Length: 333
Ligand SMILES: NC(=O)c1ccc[n+]([C@@H]2O[C@H](COP(=O)([O-])OP(=O)(O)OC[C@H]3O[C@@H](n4cnc5c(N)ncnc54)[C@H](O)[C@@H]3O)[C@@H](O)[C@H]2O)c1
Image 1 (tube, helix red, strand yellow):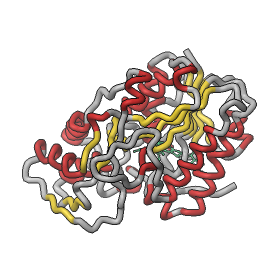
Image 2: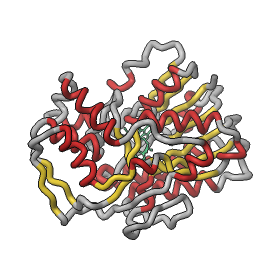
Image 3: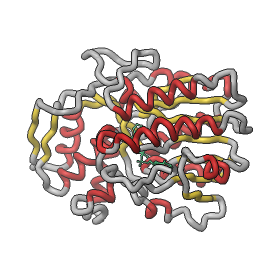
Image 4: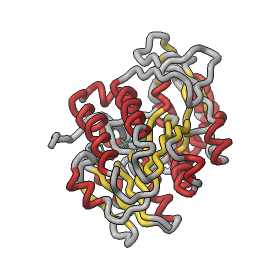
């Protein structure tokens, strides 16, 4: 059993990871500043004797000091996540995703931790040629402020090799889907399923573009597997995080949703503003750690429809802000 610090643990992935680690008998400390006024997301954990919450900023030493006491492992999830939010708030994005993330990583230089996982993104591959698969050696082509900061932070972590006592690990996440206490409907699978379920007309831009997807529960399991892995397998390695089975085009996602929601109103438009198009190889994470996803995109769609059928998230169109990364509440200290 370990004590794990999740930086950004009140978010979409972080809350599901919290549940997973608590269930496994671990102690969890979360450092988060509720940048989306997402305090509601930690209510399932407050009062759990194995859970500690520190309300603070990842770039602030005094906050890290409070959060890092006695921890074995650190997972850095915090940041302004996604191309649109970083475009809307470039200054905050620089303060958090570049300066804050680096300060947080540097803080652990001389601390007695075992592993530090930095969660990056497959968006770093940007736009790749039709028919090619990006493995971890593939040239990075970050197209947004968001991905550029991730590439910089990856390099920063990797530069610690040989200089720190812990094992740094980079996980390049596929795009997430699946239910979470901090639900996000600004991510493709969930947004499309929600819109079609509630009878909205869905306009799909550039439907033949590829992207990999992965369920938040699978990400949580993978993070745990990295904690458990021998350092010789993972130290200062980069892993694409997901599974080959979940490389999907937008059209394939829409078709899978339409199979379950007949009479869906869908139109296609070739003039999207998001040029990303990448298929990713997940061979390394499978061969090294034996990781393969338990959840497919189709099971994720079914899970969402079950939730909607129960009456959940019926306010997700009228209260959009609550369910995604649209507006921030952040003062740069
Ligand atoms: N969700 C995806 O599809 C996806 C895909 C690829 C990579 N990732 C990566 O996974 C990680 C988690 O993503 P998510 O979807 O859970 O995002 P999220 O936006 O739901 O969660 C981010 C959390 O970080 C917190 N945070 C932001 N700035 C902070 C600061 N300065 N100090 C402390 N906490 C701060 C927020 O309050 C929020 O709780 C991110 O690093 C993201 O880049 C996510």
